[in-house]
Length: 331
Image 1 (tube, rainbow, N blue to C red):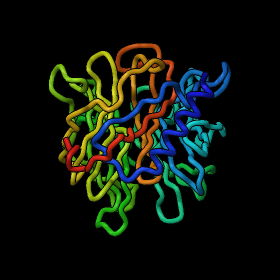
Image 2 (image 1 turned 120 degrees about the horizontal axis):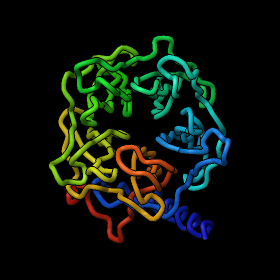
Image 3 (image 1 turned 180 degrees about the horizontal axis):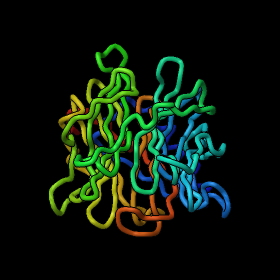
Image 4 (image 1 turned 90 degrees about the vertical axis):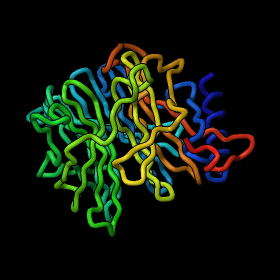
């Protein structure tokens, strides 16, 4: 049964790849089953596979993701040629189990800077989450920045408990080429903040959040948190997760400056399914042809802000029978 589903997904992704550019503010398809699943008991990802981030390197899709064994988080790598069937390649960024990463490292976000790959991630000590950086000449060997954390929690701010470098744009030629939409938490509310940097290591943080929860009773009316960002035709798009007090789901917002955001009117774009009955979280996008395919982590068990039993699933733009223009579908 699963093999038939996989073949169908591959065919739909080929159709998406061959299609002309489709609007991001349109419908998205949630695939029926997870594509990267938890490992066997005793393995480093036996309890959770979470927070995927995909980059294409030499025609191969590389998915960096969080691995949890019940005690510690690490960052692993899986590879695929089609985004549907994945082969795991083990841990690429481990934890010292001391200091700021006593519990682990997780939530990778990889960008290309010159001839290097830079991975932003967060370290967790059991109480605070802090933003860190590692660098690699390839996709395998990573060296943690000696100045970690590069972005830190600050008492009395909206990021006093947690500051995660969830989305990083690198735009060479700009006065401050590094720009970040970070996830923040102060023991009251999850929000999105903005920061800028000249070198990607020393950051200037805006004093107030740039994207916050929706209206009471809405699908994102309790918390919001960033997941992935892309820029298309001068517009920034933020794929984020929203919480209604019971479940997390995925939504989309757009901005011209990374500070003022407009929600897509038909949010959420990804909800709950047969395998992710509790949550949809931490989306990432990769370009396929002219269009986009996403991965996210979904939970089958648990409840509240932090469910359990996470696997990684697939979602992608829905190819309409009649192609519509971007303008007709803007929210």
